[in-house]
Length: 161
Image (cartoon, rainbow, N blue to C red; front, side, top):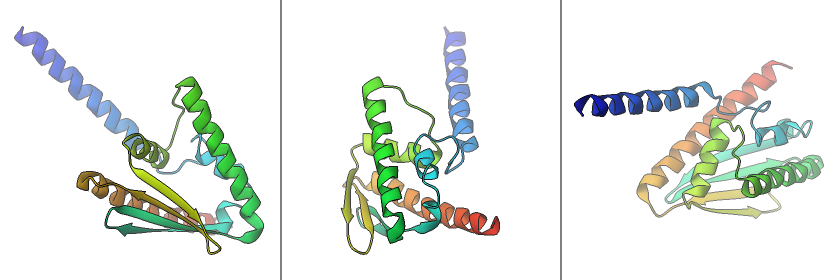
């Protein structure tokens, strides 16, 4: 009996290690493989003409995205593509490959995080909020990481030109 318990503990540890390693290997954004990021990449020039800032608020975070006017139709196509991916996931129950960013976003949605979006003449404001302080901390960490990774990615893109 003791041996079975030890084996179970070892198996749980190995499984947890495998999950942690898989998450560590996934990039934060993956425009080539992530089912959601691909929708951004499918709109030539959109990424270069869309800027987003992240800000923590007491209940989570808000992001403000500004899309250059001539790329608003591309932005709408991107959103439509992402909605189709979500519909396909809901219909089939299959979870496709997602980068860390999009996986986390999905986890927040499934955990009941309240998300609202407002389109203004100045840009798109997205808010992710929770009344659970543990979730708020995770939301704010996500916003900080996304802001950092976005800036890093933009620098890399600028260096390739």
